[in-house]
Image (tube, rainbow, N blue to C red; front, side, top):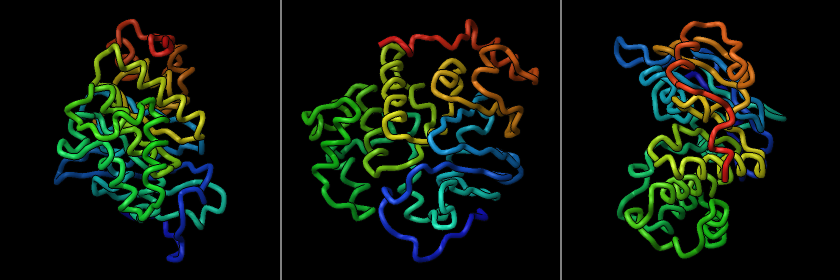
Length: 273
């Protein structure tokens, strides 16, 4: 990927970089002759939440993977913020600390033979971060799990608890941006609201920037201020959540998504605690 450059001397902790957003320009992902993402562009300002919606195979998850370097791509990914020239370049170790991803499947994203303690300690070791015990305790507290979970294995946890551990693993590096790939779609309906409320609370308290992928329009409009609709790798339209809920959409495909969501409304059960 053609990335924005940063001075080679840029080092330090994530706490150096506050109020960080992200801009994507002409992002393109190809697998042979198949174009998974076709020249997609958008920007998310610091502290904002941005949703990407579309049917399965529309390329929305591939966008997140390209941003964090898990899918080869062309185009430009650039962090936004004060003194932009000092922000880490995408693909660098400091960038990977600032931009963390929470994957869709909590059953597959956690190592089955590692305890929660080891799962949370691993990113700290990779990035050479000290105060391991205090950081692990804080991360578990932030996601609503006590210290009693620290030495359990993933198979001893419920789906909702596993996803909370996945969130804690992302947060433990003190990122500024969270990429959320359908974070509740693999969970039972009864725990989806709990995890979504947890994420919203963390975003507000930490001032995080969210980029969230989902097929559920109600979930996206609850958590995200703006959203992008995708179809077959193409951007169909960009709009606000208010536009969507008020049915102020321009493209027929967006209308079809709303109809497929049957009974779509922004005030869904996620607000209930």
